Image (tube, rainbow, N blue to C red; front, side, top):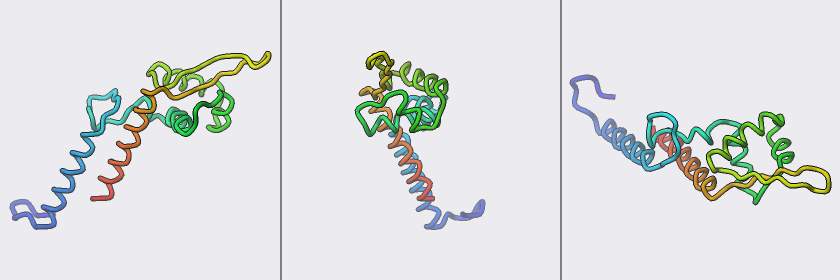
Length: 135
């Protein structure tokens, strides 16, 4: 880094250009953000660890039952239901309740909005990783 008052070196110019490029790339990634950080903020609905696990698990399959998700994520009934409800409220997942014989069956699927939000989230994380590696 150049000393204050000194002319910037070629190396400093290259660093600055990479940082500006990374910032532009991050700004182009959009997601739901609860904070005032705009496009640089992560989608807080998905970013929470348990909700990210739910969305990630559902991204690779058509649907999963409540019990399958609970086992996969190693969580409790209450924890899973609270986080799944948050994803439902954001229209990222749908929940279908039915019966198999006399046993209740709850099934979750990603909605088209949930698939788009997850894709944006992954793009944003990849951009953050690239920007960090370029430093």
